[in-house]
Image (cartoon, rainbow, N blue to C red; front, top):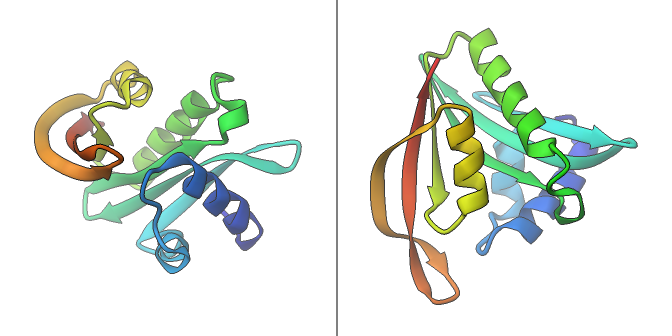
Length: 140
């Protein structure tokens, strides 16, 4: 993810989550030890993924696809790139957390071999109070 992609990726982030990060936090998650990946369609950011690398573990911090382009395989393409990037960096595991109600994302992660390891009760702020987080892991 280059600097020219940041604003578009952040716009997707703000539209994709209930409680978006501040700009400075999002921008920081593109600098080492983090890495940002983008999916481009017609030279415009259609999705992104943010990864954190620590020793032999990687954490998928955030991944999102522009609402108007969901269902077109962009999420799958990003997940393939996430896994390839983690392998290139010799990560042995990829961790992530996801809202328990985000069944589309959970299905995507499970299709790539992620397994639910733990549930964090009432973790995420939500319109109706709090929502559980599922902690998922994939061994590479």
